[in-house]
Image (cartoon, rainbow, N blue to C red):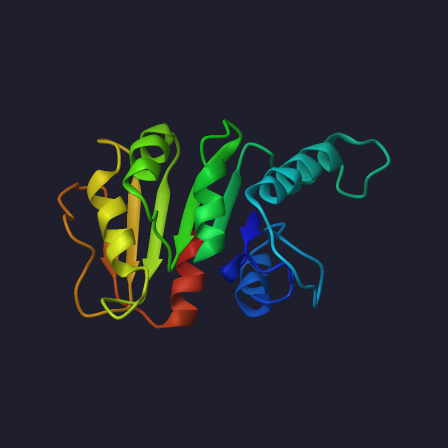
Length: 184
């Protein structure tokens, strides 16, 4: 799993708790940035993380050789990191896309990026008070027909337009959201 940080912050440990939760379920987790780092990240860093994992899996000298399931690659990001995630979600190696407190901000992005989605997507938001709630809800309404999607919402109302049978809504606590995402 490649992770894009909120604020596009280049600190690989900024989301240490949730990323450790994912890793505790057996996932390889690569976060943008170095531990305690500063500066900005880019969507290219997510692709670099995926490239590294694929290469490490096939490298005869790597301790990860044959231990990474490269057919199951997720990209996730929170807020600005979610925007970076969406920029790379059309990579054919991506098996799952997850947006945390995030949603596309411009109509042009929605018209270009949402139709290119090819793999299941999940949105996790904190209800109507979440600054990204409306953007996530608008994305949700515009997802391609038939695309498997999940909405996890800590707020009092679900994302709009939950009309597709394969979509579900949950209202657990924050730790439970991390566990749902890890087991999803």
